[in-house]
Length: 312
Image 1 (cartoon, rainbow, N blue to C red):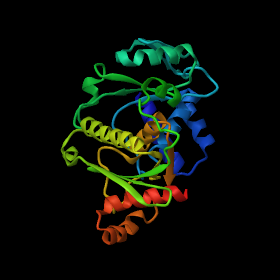
Image 2: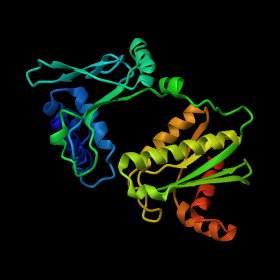
Image 3: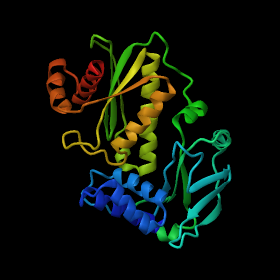
Image 4: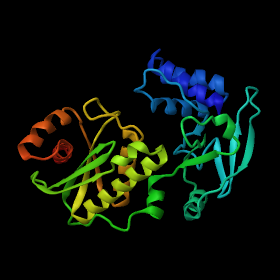
């Protein structure tokens, strides 16, 4: 796990500072990790931090991407709902497998059983669960090792899809503006006329830990999506952002990437249409709309995003 963490940092430097080709980076990582698939996985991990100038990861981790051409996972492989095999490569080519016991919540067991029996491919990783940023991972390494899986969306929706679905007559657009302490949603028709406005504020999250803040934001977003579906929305529009800008403020404990991923999942669950639009000048243009319509700037921003969804 330490070697894999270092490999991600190395891949980040080679890709974005030295500007080497991905094939050359993979060749060098394979030599370090003694496994080409772990090398590809490290490259994918490094790409998540493309916007950073310098990458220094805090704790060790391990990850193996899934592949469409193989069933299961090449390096981190579930063999049952309570057992997992983890490949440890060696430079001499004699790889070994570590078998570990794993425990999932009861509600996930039917999904995992189908994942195993139907031969789906999936990404899998091992990480260390920490309670706060000050906690030393070395002291809890053996006690809090966690396995996580990247389940195919179609399979996840099958077991955890929303009971509420987009109806054939739904034809409205919902634009979303996300901030650290609120989510603003504006529903418009195909002519751009505002049909409804729904905002959820949660200013208290700035004082909570990472997990609690994320849970509150995810719950708020889920409620807004359900509200939108029940009020005739089919198209869900968000900005395609890689990171927050200085005008909108920093999203501290829940990144824009996580927000977009949850939106994609929620829209898939309700059988809606997910649309990403260009974020250029949204914040600036929203100021003029906010003044002319006498609404707050975040609601105005959500309105602009919805309009761009119609154009898209």
